[in-house]
Length: 300
Image 1 (cartoon, rainbow, N blue to C red):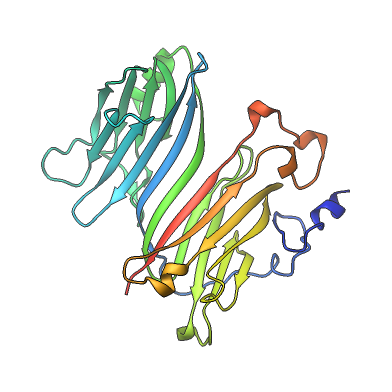
Image 2 (cartoon, rainbow, N blue to C red):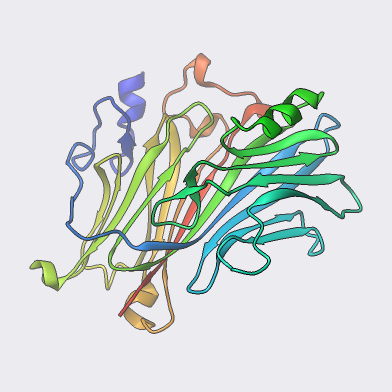
């Protein structure tokens, strides 16, 4: 049963540690010497479900521009319920503190410490920081480390921890033809390395070729990209169906201001499973759906 279902679609790529029916899946991905493009903005969308069953959408955006770097957090669709922190400005810089956000529907408190944050090339810190969001006296969202004493006090004092999940991640990048990211496609899965590479005539090719790799496996390879500038492919990751879509039209026909868009979107429900084993079937309330969007701008 498993072999039959895993091979039922010749256009579907299985990104797992088991063998695959695709000729692309077991090929090592391109390892170019180029430095990956720089992330300018990373936005993560979280859904918080409180013990009262009230739900709140939280958008956390890390940005890095020529004159500023920092963090902004918004709640729901209310423009007034937002928080912004500039961690690079000399004036009004406050890398550690707390703030109460005015909201008609929720009591929201934010606690943060970015004073020892460590960064790679992107706008989001990778270590030495924490951001804690309390919603109606429940722990709604915890980002970063939980080693600091203030964090422990809040965690201990709270009587309830809300359920939170990352439902979408958007990245805006600029630079050359190489884009790298990480994505976790299901709650019980692992974090995967995602690489997108566009090869052109400078690399000895007559026509541009697009390659998308996950964990060093090539999952799609699009030849004659200037004619196949839009398309989609189904791949399997952690036993789930993931729709991979690309649109690089503006790379060729609007290069001055346009950017390419790549989207990875999981499907929820029983129909999204690679094989129908009872232990893999999820209940409705446990279904997980995630999307990763990468907006890629090529610098001249």
